[in-house]
Length: 343
Image (cartoon, rainbow, N blue to C red; front, side):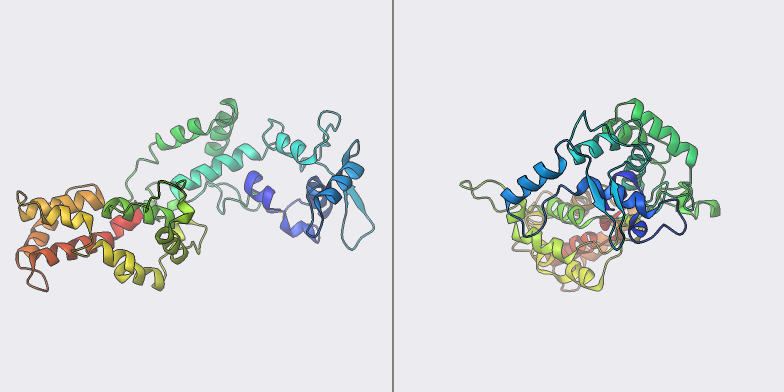
């Protein structure tokens, strides 16, 4: 079921126990698909047992599986109803993998296109992106067909697909709504605003504050050994698979406002970014504000933003301290929607 969702964009889970009530999938088709995985080792088996079982069951034979709670045994078949040519390759999962990316499979190209489209736009042409079915048609079927055909014609070249999507007019639109007709994001009349992934948030913060993973030259670089990163990712673990619906929890918001990572990043004695800005005697307050905006948002402040921030810094902020006021500005930018959203 997981393989069909990921590579074919179809939910056949329901057919595991009974024929699907709405879609054309039958219980027998589910188990014919599952038969490709019967050579996987089961829990409690030793390597020697697995080798003996695979040799006994699959060499020269078509894999088969018994449907639970029935007397029926089915042989491995593709979801389009066709049977593999086992004389070409006796390995079940190898046969399935070849069929998934073959031109004879009508599902993979569209599922792949839809998944890449969803990654860039935050919403798929079919949504949810793993639910292709007659009852859930694509929002733009002609576009999906055209991209899928081009994807196959270019030998499943993901670089070509990404280039085609990102060079489109739809991808380059602003997220700002200027007309009531742009309200539905599924029309792609404007770019959806979507939340960053936990990894993107951490990497953006690391770039802005100058954080670098502690490095031991005697050990290979391993991101999984970075405790700061791992702790942050645990706090910001995704609670939603849909990018537009990716919301910030209370715990995550508190972590961004006053967690150890942000506190250190905006502390006058620990922050590399603040130290570089504050200790630059040749920069005026406006130029220091410019530097913080460029570091966090990759743009200069508007005249209105600049006037407000300069006034705040010149007056010393809440503590009558210009350096602390600059730290406040940096903190506000790191917690801004513009920093935490893709728009």
